[in-house]
Length: 332
Ligand code: F6P
Image 1 (cartoon, rainbow, N blue to C red):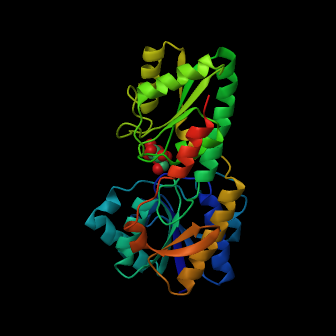
Image 2: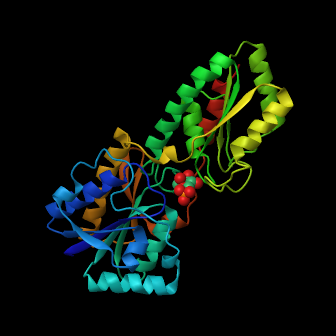
Image 3: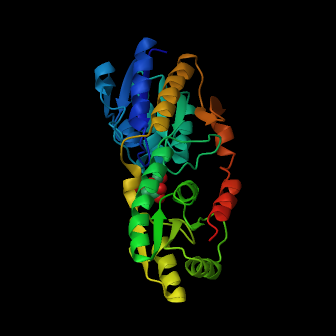
């Protein structure tokens, strides 16, 4: 293999740039030529490529977003789009491709792999909903952003002795809500994975105030209680629904904060930069060794190579132990 490509796809995640940097420099170290494909699979279809060198990836390890830009490509879901992408790869002489993204992006990648392209996936999504890896790039940074916001909200919540509902991202999963809720000391965490009794939650809030709590912070995953329409659910987002219910039922003054896309931005944490550097390097090594259809995972503080088929046939476990612990620790 002499020439490879890299693209980012789906929602951007802090750490993607650090991974691109690692991929480019590891490739050059192994004397591979490396091309950046802009705008995800859409850019591949339209031959939107540029050659990357060591300088192209200078000064990006600390930057959120992705210098390659990203897209959710409808075009690539069509047979015609996929054929065009294969033609571009062939014409450009790209024998290997590294895809940084989520589960959906890997499924796209697999289509190319089934046509003989060497493909390696790096998990990148703040949602941390990809199976077979403890972390996907961006999750740790997003959770830290949420905890930082909760700390600030706590100041004003205490001063006014109010209830605050903080809605966080996660699409149909509650991993961000759980981790940030625990680390932020939330009174309750509402996630799609677990049933919740809102009347019970209201009683808990009332008991808390009776016992001298100065505020209540409820973290709600955007997917709680139904399908989320991120940033578009103007009237019925999960946070507003829960907030309205609590205020009507308890009479406590309630405020809602929807954190939204600020969770996707910002400088990646040390963990995200480290994972990105490790996974980027591993992805290149795998391609150089002729491996294909593999995701670079991280399990129990070790890098692992996970076949795509295993990723697709697994489900990401919700951390029930952490959820139960958060409930215990939020006792009034
Ligand atoms: O998958 C990452 C994510 O930020 C989800 O948490 C969220 O539901 C979705 O993307 C938002 O997508 P968009 O940026 O396309 O509105």
